[in-house]
Image 1 (cartoon, one colour):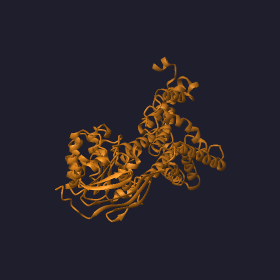
Image 2: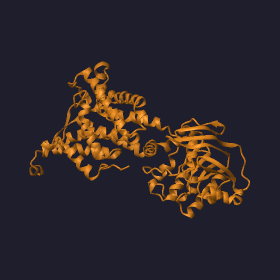
Image 3: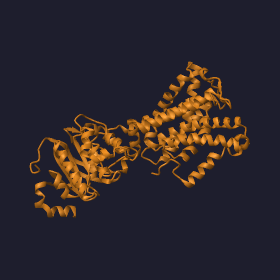
Amino acid sequence: MIFELLGVPPQALFGQLLLGLINGAFYAMLSLGLAVIFGLMNVINFTHGAQYMMGAFVAWLGLKYLGVNYWLALVLAPIVVGASGIILEQLLLKRLYHLDHLYGLLLTFGLALIIEGLFRHQYGSSGQPYAIPDALKGSQNLGFMFLPNYRAWVVVGSLIFCLGTWFVIERTKLGAYLRAATENPQLVRAFGINVPRMIMLTYGFGVGLAALAGVMAAPIQQVNPLMGSNLMVVVFAVVVIGGMGSIMGSIVTGFALGVVEGLTKVFYPEASNTVIFVIMAIVLLIKPAGLFGRTR
Amino acid sequence: MRDTPRMGRDLLKVDNLEAFYGESHVLHGVTIEVAEGEVVTLLGRNGAGKTTTLKSIMGMVARRTGSVRYDGKEIIALASNVIARLGIAICPEERGIFASLSVEENMLLPPVVRPGGMTLAEIYTLFPNLAERRRSQGTKLSGGEQQMLAIGRILRTGATLLLLDEPTEGLAPVIVQKIGDVIRDLKARGFTVLLVEQNFRFAATVADRHYIMEDGRVVDMLRTEDIPANMEKLHNFLGV
């Protein structure tokens, strides 16, 4: 009834809504990692997209050469890529904390280009297929649409990871150290907390979250060296809209913008690629710190 | 009680301490001693180097030379998180209450570094206002309550030397009195306190001895009982 009024078939509406939620799940996980890293370290991690891609590649390589299955890859890829992030932080990023955050941005941007270049050199630009794990093949008939199991898992799984991260940061003692160190690292250190180590582990965690998103994306997208940089253009717009450094803000904004993008595809497909950037421009005009951001 | 300071062993010995912020040389050889159980103040005008002295002891100034011995151990080259674990705690001038933490989270933030600290219940007895507002956001408290929170949270940790940076700054007289009561109470509990003050009248009501600082140096040391005889000198140094 209502669909006739709107002039769109329900299959198209729900299909795009689901697609929007899935995109939103990746926006949320990636912008959450960026927010955690930026909050504590004041570094805009432009390597994030490359680390997401590395997560997908670790899953693909693991399956191809070592027989590591999807579920094991969900655990291993964040650890492997997170550890590479920690090495990066210790060797390079650490030296830039006393400088303007433009330097961290330039370093991580350069690193992203190098990492993507190396993967392209090694594996070419064409995508590598990654099969959906057996347990998540098939789909559910919801009556008004078919819901593929894997896509349902992506939405639910990313919600769990995002809300879990939110819970740790906002509701636990460890999170209290993180929040306090975000405000005044010098004082938290003078209370006896090893803040440099906390920064190192936080960067590793944020990077690991990107890699986790990469593993989850592998069966949906092709595993390809540029999968990160394509996505990050939108993710940075999401971060600007949500406000850098807000945890819940980046989760909500990520999912919401995915849905907005999906709905735009139904009602005005021509604008679907630009709608997020239009929203970004409007938010920047009205609330430059972002919807959930605090000026500091 | 005040005229017989307990002369325990030296807990803190600062010798020829120099400190730098970037290019500027802020401390030029500060030498002070604080005995166990003593309350000692650093008096001086703005910019005399009092806060920098506290921060240098705590390891919060990047470039520092000279010697800081705590409980017989040289700590000048240690990182501030290591120094804190030895039993020194700071209450900074700007209070450092965290806006993203509730009152209770602020209270519980500094980790317990050694046994013997006060319990949360004891601290709330000392500061009943804080108990009532434990769920509030830390920075929603009044200035006086924030100051009490800043002092209260370092009493749990088991630290024995407290560095208090101008705890009375900008507070109403009745709150200043309360802070004075608290510092006397802390002394009675056996804490050692190094206190930065601009107001020597207040300092005289809580401390045993006073170092007077000017231009990054200690220029004089007075016992509280000597203050009345040295009023003119104090007025000259402090410009009050």
